[in-house]
Structures are given as structure tokens and as C-alpha cells.
Image 1 (cartoon, rainbow, N blue to C red):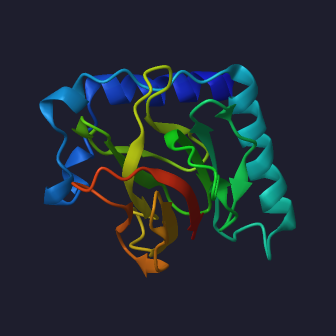
Image 2 (cartoon, rainbow, N blue to C red; image 1 turned 45 degrees about the vertical axis):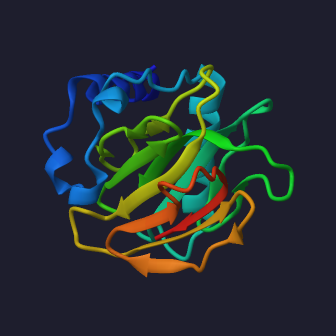
Length: 199
């Protein structure tokens, strides 16, 4: 119940706006249409699976203090995938099935921020969460694809983020590792089909 409440609060933060929205890169400002986009509908089972994945990744990590990022994506015509953690591939490769939403939870990173660029809509606006809080980006049930994600892990401690995206008709982009990472493309009408994220 507590975890569900944290997710609900994170979603409410999307609707009401975040006091931390100013940390987004200037190029990632939300378009007027994106500010009114409906957030992803997240079943309780997905919330619970992601929470369990983070707990398991903590146990499997080098130490209890090691940073962990787990994420699950909603794929068009498939639904929510099982969670992936610390650079595992979420999404699909070679199946032409776009990501429509992502749900992220971290531990030991000091918090994180994410912003999604949606097809025919633009940037949704940055949404941030503390460790152990799940934050969604994108939408479900609207057939709107994610084209790009801006991600920052450890925004409270100045840590870098690693990520790599698989883009429609392009393939895997080069892996990046810096404070704000962008995977995918904007202005090219190409969907993001898979993603890897690591602390």
C-alpha cells in the first residue's frame, strides 16, 4: 500500500508539476500539448514487480550501498514488460514495437529525473523522484510512442548516468555516460524501441 501511494504521489507530481522541473535541460521543456498528456496507467502488479526487482538487485549488488536502477517499459501491442535492472535491455529489438511508457525506480542513487519526448506531442516535462519512489514517463492506451528519453540518476549527488537506446530503423545508439543522458531522437519521427540504463 505504501509503495502504491508513493507511485500515486509521483503521478500526481506529474499532473501538478514538479518543483524540480527547473533542473531539466533547456531543450527539454514540455510543450503545451505534453503538459496535458495523460500519464501512464500502471497496474498494481507492475508496481510490485518493479519494487521486488530493486530489492533483488540490491541483494545481488556489490554492496548494500551500491546504486541500483530498475525500469520496466510498456510496449505497444504487448503491455508492460517484466522489470530490468542495471543495463539490462528493456523493450524489443527487431520487432518494430515502440516503447510507449517507462516506469523507473532507483536505490542508492540519491534520486533521479526523467523526461519523455512523445511522438507528435513533444517533451512531457521533467519528473523527479527520490530513491525507492517509482516515476513514470510516457503514456499508455493512446498509441503514442516515446521517441526520446532524458535521464539523470543521482541528481542530488552530481553522479553520472549511463544509457543506450535502440531507435527504429537505426539500431543501437552509442552508449553515453554523463550527468544528463538522452537516448532516442527528436524531430526524426523515429520511435524508441529498447533502452538500457545504468548508474
